[in-house]
Image (cartoon, rainbow, N blue to C red):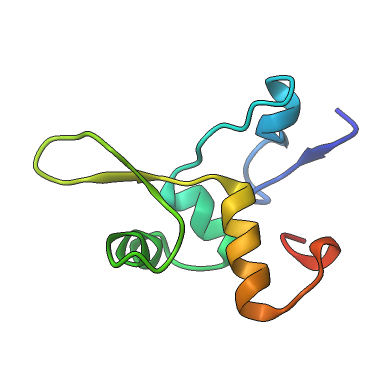
Length: 90
């Protein structure tokens, strides 16, 4: 897998969602979003609840579960930091 990225050193390498599904991006969990943003998953969930980051609610029991698109998180991060496309997520 030439374009694989490891989310954590302890995890196996994973192909980006868009590449794995032929262009369709898949949602990531708060934990995966936290790894990308370098935030604790609880902080990611709080930001989602408060509408501070782009997030998509998933129907659940009493608590709302959140999923995230990596591309939206990268765009949000760029807007907040003013960094170029090439430097985000590395």
